[in-house]
Image (tube, rainbow, N blue to C red; front, side, top):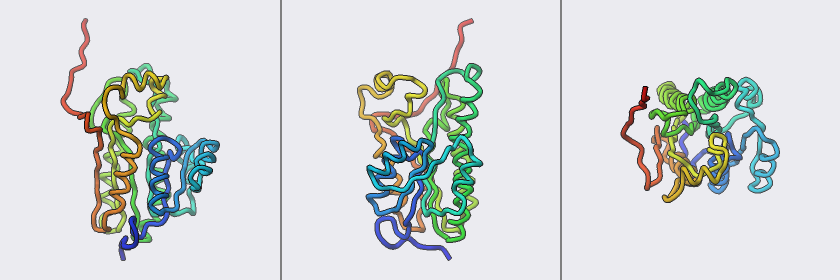
Length: 255
């Protein structure tokens, strides 16, 4: 029998895991979930940042290194969560694929894709058994659109979209919901790894318009989570009102 969320803002859901819980979006989700009454566990690889977040908001924590998917499954063995937000992600240094260090390529695939699959595989069977749960995947608007110097990142996010769609088909009738959240550029330190300096990031990516904030993403997640059990928001594409993504371009070379 499918459990039906009927009590409180988020119904019967009581517990949640947020990966990448110490970053901009992850931290915002943790805080908003706690405000909504959930018992939240934040997962991340840096214990010192987890300890700081715990001291600030009172969440539980778990060290999860998504670049090592098999150890993630081991760490989550025996645990159960009503809500899972697969938020952790990294972006390699910008550049053409053939110039990227191999380590950065494989780390990106492991964290962005294999790690999310490992978390989901570890926790989904319990949700199916209970007849209730909600799995979120934070992808990107750049999954379905190609961008120069970001082939690996885009590929991992496109794969998350394909996986979430397939998973949704697998879970019909189980009472477990699946939502992909595909944001545009969010004003966080996420781009520091590919661009180096936050002053450069803000100047190139966020100057002169109202940018998307982490709290915008967390609010969208809480909205989808709070719908009645018979309603599942499969995909949320979220951008700043002052931006739109569309059209196309040719890559050319003068030879």
